[in-house]
Amino acid sequence: MVLKSESGYGTAPDDATRRLLLRHMLVARGVDEEACQLQKQGTLDLWPSCQGQEAAQVGSALAVGPAPTVFPSYREHAVALLRGVTPQELLLQWTGRTFCGWDPRRLGFFPYTLVLAVQTLHAVGYSIGQRLQHREDFVVVYIGDGASSEGDMSEAMNLAAVESASVLFVCQNNGWALSTPAEEQMRTSVAERARGFGIASVRLPGQDPEAVFSACSRAAAHVREARAPYLVEIQVGRIHGHTTSDAQETYRSRDDIARARAADPVTTYAARLSGLGLVDTAWFDAVEEEVRELREQLMKEYA
Ligand SMILES: Cc1ncc(C[n+]2csc(CCOP(=O)(O)OP(=O)(O)O)c2C)c(N)n1
Ligand SMILES: [Mg+2]
Image 1 (spheres, protein in one colour):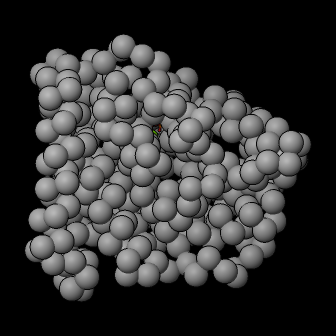
Image 2 (cartoon, protein in one colour; image 1 turned 90 degrees about the vertical axis):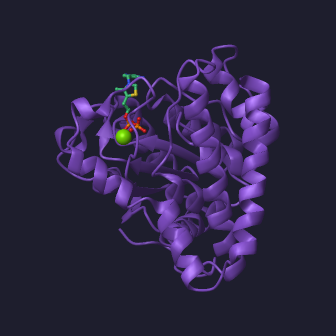
Image 3 (cartoon, protein in one colour; image 1 turned 30 degrees about the horizontal axis):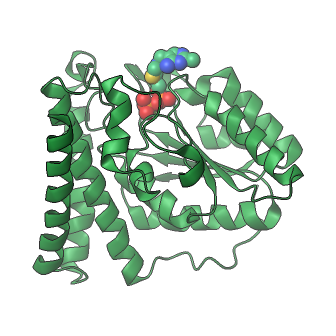
């Protein structure tokens, strides 16, 4: 199945957007690192790190823009921050003090879902409801490779295809459902499976935020112009364990962990833009200062 539209949404990001991609990735990394620290100190009960997945999250979120309502899973911290969730709001849920730290209606960013894949049904139903009320019906839903094995995901894909719902499925395939490797979960890619339901799809590596931005821009154009669903499967690396409670060294080879670290999208992209002269020391200093302030606020609030 091919994209209905290859037009518009100039798919390659311009230089300002490239800097923005990197900035959001660096902010997300800083907040994630601080959350890991706070969990070690006992302030947070748990933290599911998104390290290694920043290019997929920032690239997709910037590509679709602010219009769509987003239904996240529980690891979309970079998307959350980009959509306006503050770091304080983001961490609150992981102290066990609230179900959701932010206002989902104001931000168009729904609460995190810990029950795998239910958000896919929420997303499709929401989009259909919005369309019936002649409101913005473009919806983005994030799932992991493991969540894609749930029955809800199959139901949601089928319903989206049959109803031609304006839903962009973004699957971050980090190769693991907790300790179960992707090859033990499925015999085809998630993208191929989507096509079986009649949903156009693409699969791509997720280290380069520009490639993700381009693919998601084209996917968003398809959703908007064809008013039909689309699925993007992004192959990402998981740098840390499933959560801070998970000792991944017990089931994952050292080499595999080392590969994920070596392919770190944040350091790789920072080096690339620096090499191209698109960012300089002053630029890095300014972002570092911003991240330091965010981390200090978190420490004050939580430590
Ligand atoms: C319906 C349901 N079944 C099982 C679980 C337990 N569980 C929590 S996370 C997880 C793995 C999810 O993997 P994936 O969707 O790939 O997301 P990732 O954590 O890798 O981002 C499992 C099995 C759950 N939360 N919900
Ligand atoms: Mg996974």
